[in-house]
Image (cartoon, rainbow, N blue to C red; front, side, top):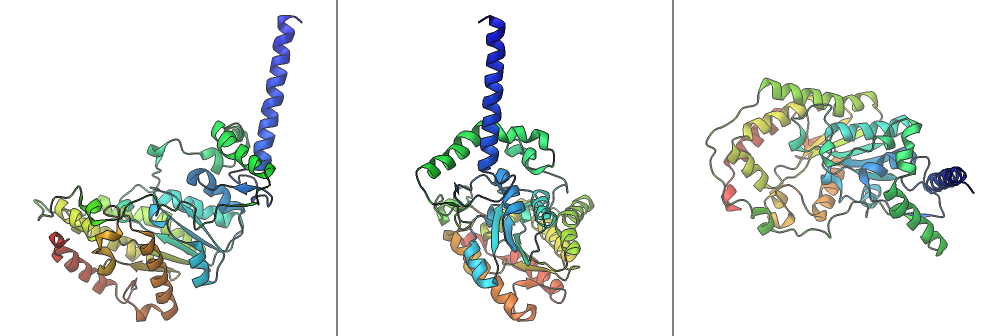
Length: 361
C-alpha cells in the first residue's frame, strides 16, 4: 500500500473513531445536554457549571434551590418534605447574580412551572456589574448553555467528559450497577470536607478595631446595585407571578460584619442591602428574609469554616425557619422583611451592627 493510501486509510479510521466516540457520549449524555438521564445508567453529578444547565432543562421538578456556595449544603429532601414539592438543587459556587439568573430563566424556557425558587443573595455580590460573569474560575462552558449545535464538539470530544464521566457510566452498567444519579442532597455537599470552628474563622483576624475612615455608598455604587437587582433578581419575578421567590440574605458570621466595620465599609454595605431590598419589595411574589439578628447562629463561630460559610446544620435551620415563617405569614415573624417593617428593620440593623461588641468573639 502506498503512503497516500495509508494516509487516506488513517483519516478514515480517525473519522470513524471520532464519530463513534461522539455518538457514545451523546447516547450516554453524562451532562444531560440532550435529555434527562437514562434509567439504566448511573450518573455522577459533580460539575456545577457543566451539568446544571442540563439538569435545569431536562429533569422533572417544580421547585429550584439555587445560589452560590451558600446553597450547596441544602437538602432537597427537607425542602420537599416541608413545602410539598419535587425540587432540584443547582448551586453555582462563587457565581454572580447574572449566572444564577440565566440558569433560572432556562427553567421557564424549557417549560417548567415553578412553585418556588429558593435562593440566597450574597452581600458581597451586590455591587457588581449586571452582566459580570466569573471568567476567573476557568473557561465558562458556553457550549453547554448556548443553542449552537456546532460547538457541541467541545462536549462530545472532550477528554474529561469521555474518561471521567462517559466511560465510568458504561463500566457501572456493564458491572450491573443499579441506574440513577447522585442525589441532590449529596450533590455539591461540602459538610464533610471542612472544619467548622471559631479558631478557623478568627485565624486571620487578630482583633476588631474602630475604622480609621468611614466610607459611604456612592451614586455609582447604588446605580450598579439597582441594575444588578433589576436585571438578575426582580425582572424574573415580575415575569412569573405564579412563582414564589424565596430570597434570603445568608447569615454571615458576626466576624464578617466586624471585618466590614473595621474596614470602614459598614454604612456602604447596609445602604446597598437596603437599596436591593426596597427594589425586591415591589414584587408581591418575592419574599425576603434576613438572619442578621439570629445571634444563636451568627455569634457562634463554631458553626463556620470562615467568616461567611456556615455548617450544614445552619442550612437546615434556615430552611426550617423560613418554612415556619411562610406558614404563619409575614406579620408573625421578625425574619421576613416587608414594606411594613422595612424602615424599622434597617434602622435596627444599622444600630445593631455598629454597636455590637465584636471583640467578644
